[in-house]
Length: 419
Image: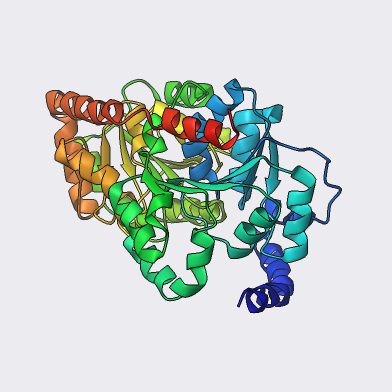
């Protein structure tokens, strides 16, 4: 079966190249470092202690406390990502403290060269990346693999179950599957993982640190707007969410006349479209890439840059985390909470089910069904400083009560490395 799988991947190569070319029209970074994805570049002979695979920007941010601790232990680390936004974040966060490459595709010759070159003493795959050839050739090269901060949503499990007999052997090539919570652990077992390989270590996302965040440019922008402006960050938005929210901005302006909406689209290729949308709807709109457009009377500002969401939260009075008014499953609400920002979310948060359950139980997040409720909720909270302070405190309590997972994951790393 794996032979057929590998053959399909080789047949897909022309389409992969076409895809990178197509995405590169709006994001030139997709056309750069292409050879890395096939291990056809001049690869450095650079053995590492730990290879860490994170898919994109969100996973890199989530893994940062773990990487910081491993660097403190003087480990040589190779980080792979799939997306340029992830690559940019690695470079910005860690510089030359780590090596970064794009993850190789599921091609046997490519993967063999990757593991032969870097010779990692262990591999950490973050969250849910079950790539059969990657797992097979890591095992063939004698690289022990672990799945860290493992999660498996109900939707993902249903997809994997359609080919459960194919994926089961690869799940059991992991030395350990360390899940965020009991539900995730149980789903991996239902998918075919041996129970003895699966355990719960908690969610690293609760250990988010904000000490590295440089928000100087955003404090300058806030100064330009004036201290009387109320900043609402609309974060990680997807198709249709911006229009839903902007169509109700007038409602919020009636309650909070000095409000400015800072919109941070999730995907860079959508930046121009969102800027155009806001201007077509008649709002005085600035954009991060053109500081001259940032004026005291801005109603909307679009952050058309990557890797700066945490810095945006530093100047926020309130935040709405997107991907939750559309069936995406939400994004990380713990990021604004770590900045002491009161958080609103839509109802579609299945990718963060346990985190949201913990927050809702402690009245630490506001869940709204639509944009009208969002604006109404923002207005009500703004008019009640005591309730706002209570929401922030409740969220901080939940965050602090769940910290500590990084230490448990580091203990697993030490055990894998025989230390």
